[in-house]
Image (cartoon, rainbow, N blue to C red; front, side):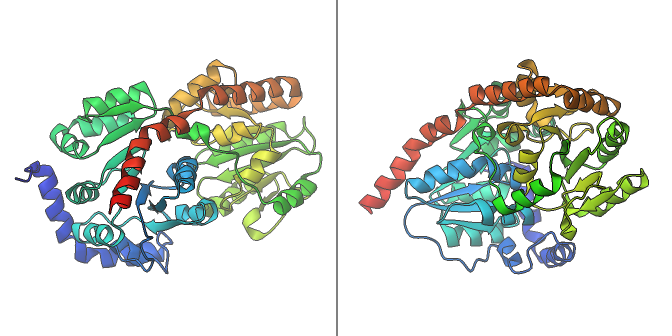
Length: 432
């Protein structure tokens, strides 16, 4: 006898089924504003032109670029075992990232809208043998539909922010019913383990953070060489993955430091590239000369602020910038991942709002591998101090790299936990 669903989940299923006709309007609106791929929006309805690969299929889902980036080494290891891999994400930028970074033989699809007809169509077409959900992007209909088809589901690199934990805590029967359908939760920290357990997850293992094991960001050598030649010997500072409200502090820091450090170049990489023109205008209003990379311009001797409003070029920026302020941390956003910059030798500055990566920043700060800027006005002070003292900056950089090296190992622990599932899949297909 099938388990009776909590009223919340039963109601959600009914509501999302009834809302299916509205997806035409939703898709049209999202296409208009660039939130959907014009040639692949049917994948949101579970329709795919790609064929299912032969043999056992491991399905990996991550919400967007950050989750997918963390999972890339894991996907590569699974592919190296000769398993077919299906990767799903939910954003256009993550699809572009997948095209650049997925290993050969891995197939990317957009995650379908979480309505029962679309979920059924997706699962019936792909017939995954194992589902890996990165972090905490858990959709009720997809979990229920997968469980009904006997697909084992595993959370990898699992995390639950305090905000998400409190929200789910108000619906204990709902989240417990979902977690009962998840075979295993591989989580990042002991705090995450406690939160998953409190919400009813029956099997939990703390494996560490996969983001600590990501390889160095790739780089286009020709683009790096051209930008490096344009920059020359100028002192360079970068502000990476910035959000609205932070660029003003970065621009102000440059304005205050410009006279003391002739030739200073500040590179700003907004989290959302479409904001590039506005950032350039703000720099201009502050009396600085700004250029946008999206307009195919390289900085010249007069350029103060270079706005890298492009996608996938942080590997270039981090290799050029010995000092990097990590965005999303001077405003209540939660901070951005500093690991990629640390691995490329940058000394890291960050604001106080780093809840998304609290453990990583805490370890870096404790080991003096990064430094907290308590409020926007202090950004210029700390950047200026490191520009004056390259030896101190180098010590911070080395301490950061050592900290990341010590904290690593999540990839191996995750693969060890997945090994029984992969062996079982192999045996099932051999016997079949």
